[in-house]
Length: 369
Image (tube, rainbow, N blue to C red; front, side):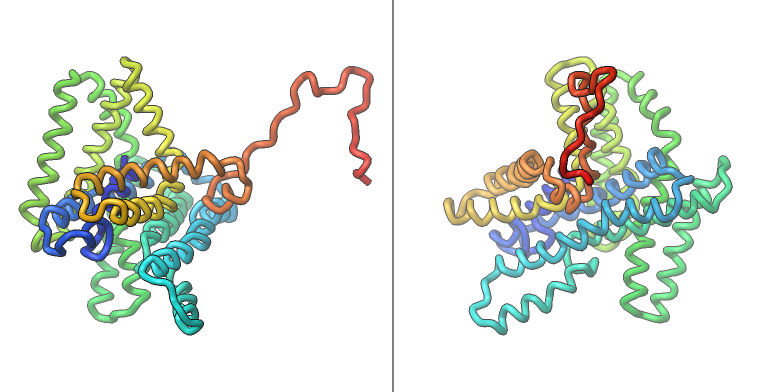
């Protein structure tokens, strides 16, 4: 659900120079408000979900070199490969250089693609360092009823300390650390709430579907109310409050969808689709912008002045279907799997028919020395 909203945000455009917002007057309040509302909670939801995933699947007894190797393969390798390519594609979409000096200017910009300010890949920076921080705390802290709370309070204190430091000594390193500690609060909150989620899910399942839907609508209304009251002058506070509320909303919707999927066949297919998208969310994150931007450019050329609704629908479909098709075609390619952070496919096990019969020596290739 979170990666779906990321696609919608980039269809809208993060500012007046991106997405469908560049096709319409820059002062259109509806598009700006729609982006700000979704953005006020969606990335916090994804970071909290990552904290929950670490708490559920993370192994505190994993050696540091194994933990680091996993994060390098699943996060840093995709960052290193695809961040410069995305920046190159975005630069060339504005216009192709006509002279050699223009190409040299483009190439000189590429190392900046790894900076978190350059593209959407700031999220990978956050996941990498927050995951390492969570793992390190799980190794050093004694397990107990309060250790998750200590981690969350420590994340709040760390961010406050970094902000105070940056007020006195402004630097690029300080801003980078502030970005990490800002989002680490939501990551630590996900770690904190994870043990209580199964019990909350059981309570939701005991409610009627009508009450379940009303709860979701109430959370959505609360998110909208906070955004309407605080967003203009206190957007940081809006994000801080709406992040956990948005997580509650998405969790509520996930439980409802799973509940309906266990009873009705059409909903079961939708639930399986949501789970599949979540399992390859990194691939959607890496490639959706190409399809979103390509669909917008193509549709504008085919239908100049097309209505906004058509751009939104086409862009969302392209951003969802395109990465899925790309993954479907390339998922068995070892180089592709390595480049997007997927583990290698397991080697096929020999069938009973291929196994040597008793008394026979297994066949050995003549090329083996």
